[in-house]
Length: 220
Image 1: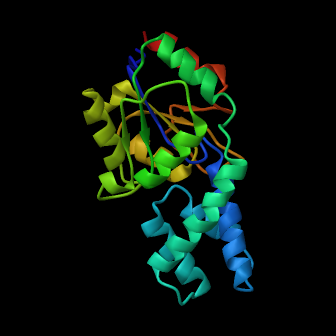
Image 2 (image 1 turned 180 degrees about the horizontal axis):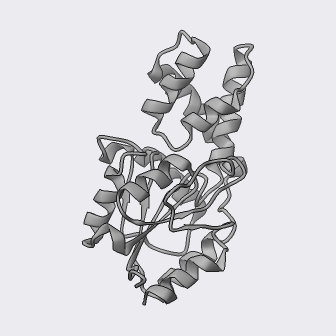
Image 3 (image 1 turned 30 degrees about the vertical axis):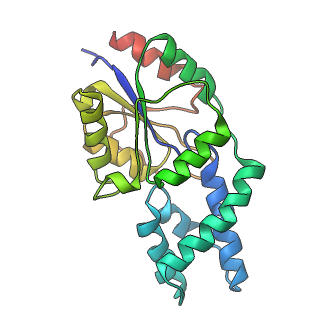
């Protein structure tokens, strides 16, 4: 029997907005500034992780002398200008949100990014909707792929995790959703199409994929 889905948790970076490609551009500029070449295998390891975990991976990989704090400041300084110039919603986002609103399905954002960054992105996007709550890097002890953020999201909705759809673009995020026993929908992007999505309930082409909407019809 299909399980009834009554709420949706959205990842942010690379899922709702094109910030994964912006983060890659930032990383490229940072390593080239130091006379280095960007290693996309490293980017894959960093994707979906909070900056407090991702940046140490970069420091170790390139044997950098800067601290995590110094590189965080540099990262978000470069990123800030890119957001103004190039931030965009991912294909299908606005239509999917409208569909969920028409069904009165509550929504949350569950991201490894910091709250100030989420606020900045949403202010620029001006989405025609409301989210029930946000969960960010500051709200969890363990980052993805630990299921904590999705366990907390289900608790925030007041439902068991199996009644919650999770939309994720990264392997680590999808793994967190699967471990939480949520209805995990993997939405690979340009930079995550090689990821493994073991255990996902669905793997779709984009947020415009009709199978996402059909999951609500099949679960009703």
